[in-house]
Image (cartoon, rainbow, N blue to C red):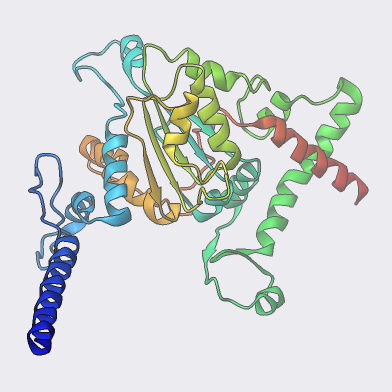
Length: 355
């Protein structure tokens, strides 16, 4: 009986083990449902065995590559939906064409001007971008390395911005250019009243006629019936102002963010686009995309697959990276936060007077 009982106990234990195994199997080997390939894209990266792949083929493969490559591919689709001319190409009336095309707002942090990173309507950046834009017109910036020793660079008179090298002479050339202008402006100020933001910027070749930051809001509000699109490289102040302005029209129709910021600390830069949807800064019907990538990598690829492709179709020539001789102050500064800009130049004027 003991043997039979023991045997029976063993048999019962075996059954329990089998039941447990079946339970584990049902958990681990979860049956898969068939995926609708009309809704889900099959992953397939670029075929580098194809000798004719080229840039266009690589860009076309982004959406099906996965991870941030797919996000970049989605961003390409969104930007291509920001129609430059949403009407028949035969329509020649410029007033009508202007009334239907999407108004694009672009924001970026000033360090991207140094990196060499438009067909956009409104640009918001930090004040340093203006200075760096002017400096690049006077002398070139060079590629270096993130790990170059500061002591060595200091001994050679080279300033490092990330992996960019800016000779100290560039700043001297900038001062040699700006100082006579500031000296003359100081004399004129003593005779003719104080300088205004518009006069200062006009003197430096910029045409901004009103210091009122609310003009940004008007750009969005009065865009209707046109759609608006947002492209933000980085975040911070430019992203905040652009998104806030579009809140006054119940949100932008298109939005692409490119940055590496995270949202766990509640930062504005790291926020996902859906957070802006909750504020009414991006429409609920929009399909915004955030690309988690260095903008100096993602943005040139985005431009190559969108604006540059259209330009190529127009005249057969695309220049993505201008040479130093071809570089000129950007004509797309249709709007700048020039209250900050004025503050910077007031400090410059004050410091130079002390010198």
